[in-house]
Length: 71
Image (cartoon, rainbow, N blue to C red; front, top):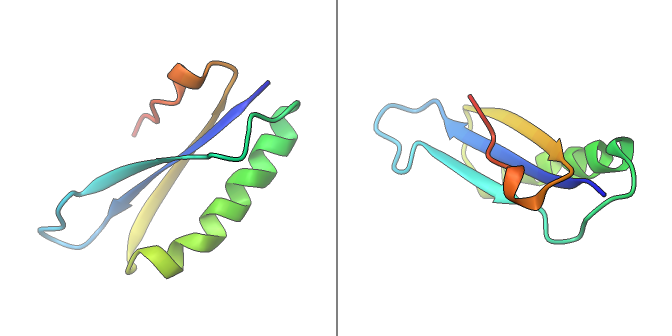
């Protein structure tokens, strides 16, 4: 099973907090491909939650505690 998480970092000067990790609440997913599909859905919702510009990193991991997304 795979768990999805994304990290969103604002590219605006002085943003507080500069980065946030968002963990999926719908999973886990049986395959990495399904996890990555969910990541795509999550990324699609970001414009409603964050003002651009921002950078995005994601991770699909087998361990829910392993979703520490590295920059």
